[in-house]
Image 1 (cartoon, one colour):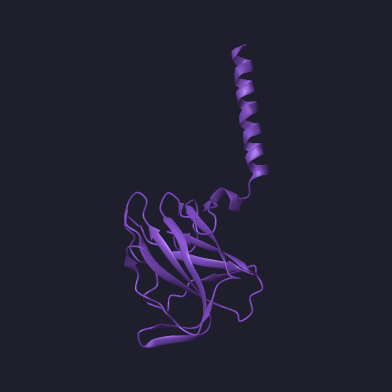
Image 2 (cartoon, rainbow, N blue to C red; image 1 turned 90 degrees about the horizontal axis):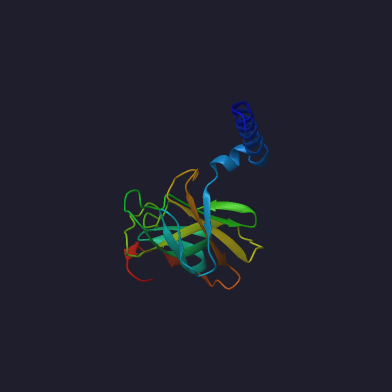
Length: 183
């Protein structure tokens, strides 16, 4: 093959690669998180986070010491740890998708697992409380956890399915301090 043909072939391949990347991906796809999903009750590990949903309950009230809030709440107990390093090892963003709506974990309970330091090789057990509408028709939800706040662009996003149809309803749930150890 002559040098001119080699150059022409190389340029043609580069143009074709650019065309494929423009047609095949959107701007969102180019910055989308790396989704790591698991089954119900399964521990899921990503680059920055290892997590599992240990318990799901509904509550009519959540409390922390003297503070309380009435409403319809989904409280999820999560077991989480840092798989490799403790640098930036915190859950910054926790959302729950139910009925096509996305709810962010409430920051009102100061004892929430959100922004609690995670450790390598040691589980941290904590609770996340989501205030939801009175009526929820879905029997399943998706718990999304990320170590990046706002949007997990180009980072890991742990997705844990949870079943709501068997979740018990309690009149009140105390949001306990996150702690090291087993649930």
